[in-house]
Image (cartoon, rainbow, N blue to C red; front, side, top):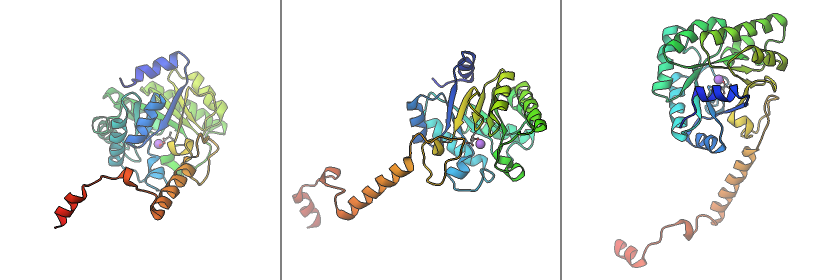
Length: 274
Ligand code: KIV
Ligand code: NA
């Protein structure tokens, strides 16, 4: 049975920390399920790590539906949360239409959207219409052109705003909030003040759970390791080594062999060519 929001509330109520990771396709979703994580984020980070774009801004609702469907087909137990992409919730009407698509066509259980008090009415509207909402505060990548890619809410006024934003999202009916790239003590305080779980990324050790991007934790880029992540494997090197060996074997004739091939009675072939 698929993990429900009530199940996540149960984990949180028992003080169990909640691990979450992104996944963007069928095979990776299968692996997340095998690893026993309760939640998958189909993040609009796919714009960068899957599509090779510079930001999440060009990602469309169609993209998110497409990737959600693949992820949902690949797993039957993790709860799947899908990002509403840039400009897909600019009006409440857009939010309802696009939120409905992510659930009805994509198969997600919840959407996630970025922002605080300005989007609280939208969150309330979605929740009332049956679309569960996870919030996202701190560094919100869809606003990268305004806020830059840096730690947010380091000063008193911005930190106070973030606390108020978190409370407003909870009040509007959000069931969890991602806190991205904010000081650890602020994330800890927000987590203390909220009843709903906080899911951190670059927000210190005291959130209710953590979310990380698949490619970061598995070392699938060779480029760089952001401070907020930890490489649990270096799959990029493994994959490149495997591909090199494969190519070498093709070049040398070591692969494929008879064991990888279908045989044919020589008489049948001779007959075919006669
Ligand atoms: O798109 C994404 O992967 C995210 C997480 C980093 C929180 O929003
Ligand atoms: Na995102």
